Image (tube, rainbow, N blue to C red):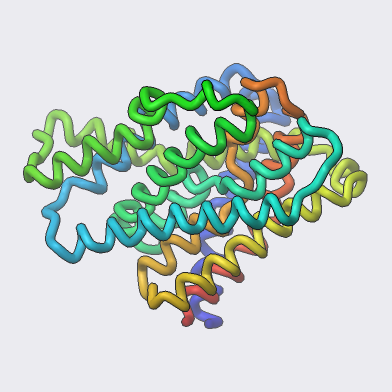
Length: 307
């Protein structure tokens, strides 16, 4: 277990260095809010689909298809587990706060934070399976998550699900893999270049928001601690226990654990802003959970690798 913990810690520390650069960039005014929003859109609409398509540029066999199905089902179940935990563990008289707090427990930063770590620890296989987890995340986020934040069933749209860049990337990549379509070099190279931005850009973005965190506020509201504890410890450990009980082992166990143990999803702030919930609280939870995840993720992922 010590070797697993050291390896994960080393990779998380590398990400931490990139996050620190984001902090420096904000403090020195090298980047501002507008620039970060632009970078976020680049990651969502270009980088994430490119890394997914790149990871699917391979021949599929029966075992890979089977594993893809397993990861997708496990990802859905993990989100159901998180939904149950959020509704049992989070109560608040303020409806706006309650919705943000529950959303924060349910949805992890499985794109921004997990894909770079899966790439570092497991290579293309990690991203290959991690992309399927992201697809499941997007399905739940743009259905149940949308309903939770909006409080209106009419906001759920099949069109929004299909055109979501994460899901669209998986669909395109999967079709390429099924029909053995290989991108010509003139297209494969730009896709590869964009995919290589998957680690530095998200970490710079996270660093930007962490730099704006008011550390005094961490101690003002006990529920922030509770939400972070549920997101970073309770959800991943219960999910890990469930996966181990049903016989999930090896890379699949590690991939799903990385995704389940990631901090509060950046989508929380996006949805909070869209539906006029407590946006400031959502941004604080994303930042605080990211800070503490630098400690919890190596411990939980290291444990998953050792069993």
